Length: 113
Image 1 (cartoon, helix red, strand yellow):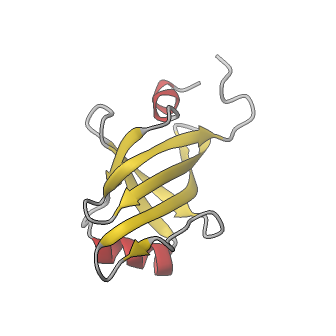
Image 2: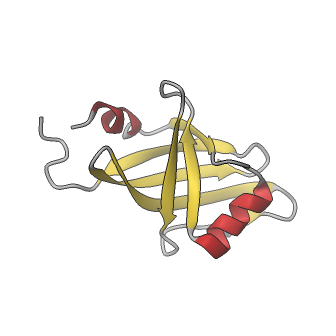
Image 3: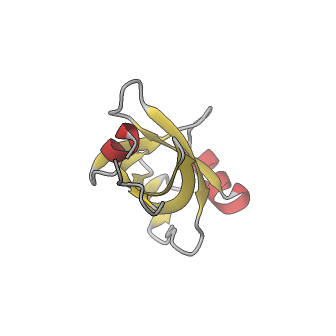
């Protein structure tokens, strides 16, 4: 399996809202209108900023108060990283725009050497 994907599959990775202008308002707009968010894995070399297609059925923002900038948004979605199809799972605390997350490899045989 790809080394970067393997590292990011470990649960409990530190993540933050990524992209060109991270803010609570921008995160809400991306979740509700665009269906595409940026999640940055902050502890990889230089940080790994991933564009994630939001899975609205698995994403849960019921605990997020976007107007007040507090609470937690549970975000899930898919992307391809280094030819490996993956699901990104992240819990983002709105007050800091950071939290924890990990990837799940979806490709059959993704763990083959």
